[in-house]
Image (cartoon, rainbow, N blue to C red; front, side, top):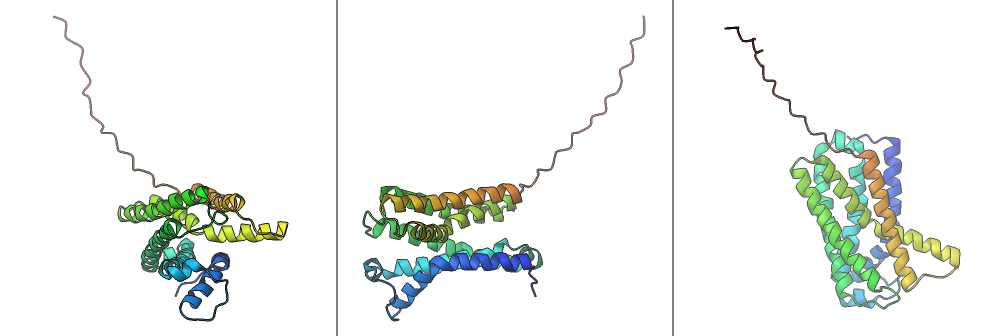
Length: 233
């Protein structure tokens, strides 16, 4: 039985709500594509190629929500085996989320109001980086390098949580201005959300993670026999 502290419950609850905000619309879309009633506005891209968007929604939700458990010290310390199993699950989910996101970015047709050239390339770079970071994290933990593993997963998680921060910024913009941001402004706000997440990740890494100190090699002490003064001849 894992006993979580109150601060850990609060942290997990916050991450769950934060991740669920952008996932709510996506989960509704998944239900619609599965044959449920149409609630959200029709999306022609989802109708023409539903598999990538379904994979992306489900894998992203799994990566963000279940991935939050990996930040809880109680699970890492009390149930290291569970930490490893969860790690394998979210690593696969994160790879699926990154790959499906890259597929949709490149193959889906977006209007300029929804995705300009800058947002396209940022999505390509970050999706590729997220995939590379997860692979590097797996390699690092197999090499027993906990610092590199943790730092890589924190950065990948920050990229994966981009949609949550984008949703919060988008809602805030609508409340402040009364209209939805479109075109280059929308692209800029979405890119800014990733910048905030990655900045937060770097602050977290530098404040809470410490690389393991390499053991110092002991200097070999060579006993030197003191020289005796030469005898006078």
